[in-house]
Image (cartoon, rainbow, N blue to C red; front, top):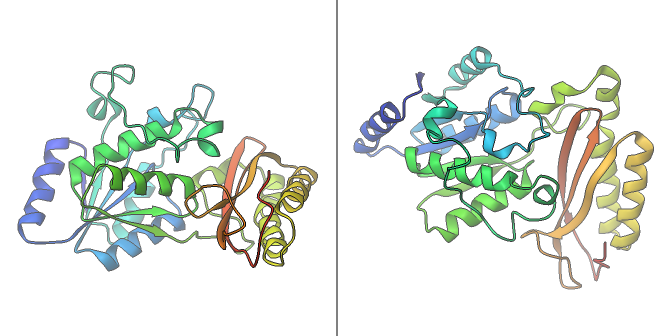
Length: 288
């Protein structure tokens, strides 16, 4: 695996592979890799001839009171994992390389509607940061296909809309959530959990499973979501949101059959997110 930090080196290297008619995949990451990231690389290997992974802790997507400084940097371990997973190129630029004029003067990419509410409501400007850096990476790598985890359901929806609205010739593939044996969705921020919090954390997934089952049996969404928030509080979480949306993140109506249950909750210093697909059997009360 080649590790590149310079933009021109990346462009030159990728161009050589493109001249060979190779299909190119991109896997954007912020590092501190775990099995969920490696699942993205494995999926990319199945769909492309060459896999480019990016490792960049993007300051634009962090709010002023968020964990930018504390976010784990594990470059050497990440590099070793990517090499073993069969990644071909690791692109790890500096902040000054991508934002040479600073964040305040940087052109930003805004995806309306899908980037609002849910995590976008709790983290103002977050998805502008995501959309901007992903647009940069798409421009630099010009991949045929790119891979994103389904744990970040709203992010995946935002990226799909970005690609569609800007008519980018890139296939976006969402990769299923990778979970620990106890059901906790793998996340780089799980490392913030204390031993006691780590024992509590699977209750988020367990609660979502119970809510999904109740919804699929036709129980009122309003009542189910209220019960879910109460259960999370009782388990020790501070819920940020718990919502039922259609698969395009619009409101659920009496005609909706395929939906998604989305949750974000604080546990200690860790903000955990998760989601589950729900098959609604009949008219559902979509009020919050």
